[in-house]
Image (tube, rainbow, N blue to C red; front, side, top):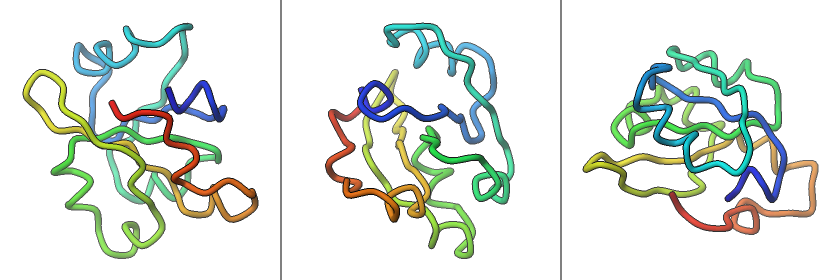
Length: 107
């Protein structure tokens, strides 16, 4: 999984701390303390490195001023819903790794 390859915070965007988030965390090798944000501006204020998980429709509805600062890393389906993993572009500017190299596998 991406977080194992490159350490960073796991942030759920517009996903509550209920069963939906628990499904993702159940597949992790070790327990983590994820963060939860509900407003697009919070994406730009999160400390790097951070990997964001959201529903595809919420990612697609990001305001232009936020969307220009993020890069889609992976997408997949879980329980009939489409989800995406994304990160801020700035996370890759100070490293030799490209966003594509970070993607180990999709959801």
